[in-house]
Image (cartoon, rainbow, N blue to C red; front, side):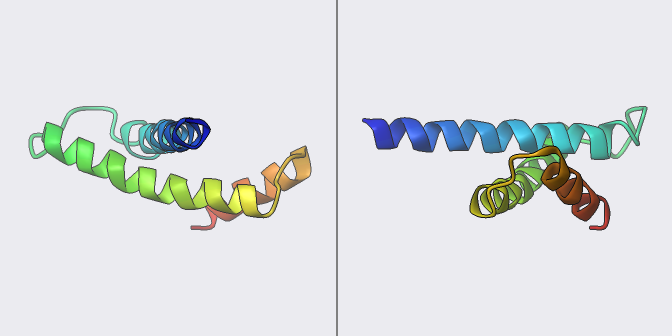
Length: 81
């Protein structure tokens, strides 16, 4: 039961971070709905960002990012992408 809860927690945190990354990377730069935008396209883009968020969370967990300096370094690496 505990393993299922850990998997669910990681899945939800990955989707949540993926949405945050998607929102600030895509939705904030496109401030209006374009004619060629579709709802399915937005969902697919969110899922692609969620895959990227999975690897970000994996690296944060692997390298034990926990203080302000480490978060700043990761933020700089994210911007350099």
